[in-house]
Image: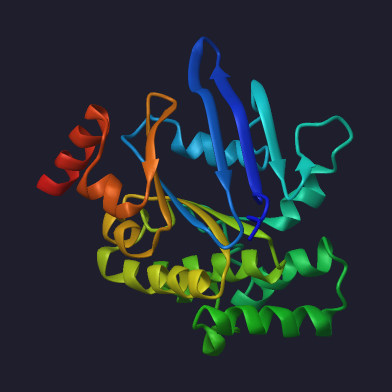
Length: 248
């Protein structure tokens, strides 16, 4: 059986901020329905990698193909590409003066030009999918951090993306609220959503990831199934990182 082409294909990706090279030639493929978990020490380039995938950061060199589209090619409609790449950030970025439903419908109405009734129906379904069917009328200030993050995930899902990028989605949450967000991500994985996750939630990585990518100093040092990366890492840098997180 022929393997499906990657949803995301990155080759020779480099990114510099001034004289500092943050990404040093990244090659990575993400296949349909795959959950790829990116780990590594702070400053290793993980979040920059994600932000280059939808050109929130402009790469310095290299190619990024998303769903067959070269997102760096002149003339590429990057806004059209971003509609198919969901992004969930560490901060929820919700509008405080809008309800949960209003936050989710905003892009549907303004970007996709959906009529209000259709946008409301899609948004209500997305909120139900993340366990917030009863919070449509709540404002962000009335929701816990975990609930706000789930609204942000619903906002990404409402646009029916081909893949979702998660950049430290639980790091701003109190520990007792992390589980509800991870459960939504597990559900998405079960439903076949393609996901790339940057996170420190190693238990989740072990349990849910198809593949773990270890980055250090702007490079992919090692990648493989969770059992291999956490149980028998091949590279000394990976071993040192895994030993450190196990001790903590």
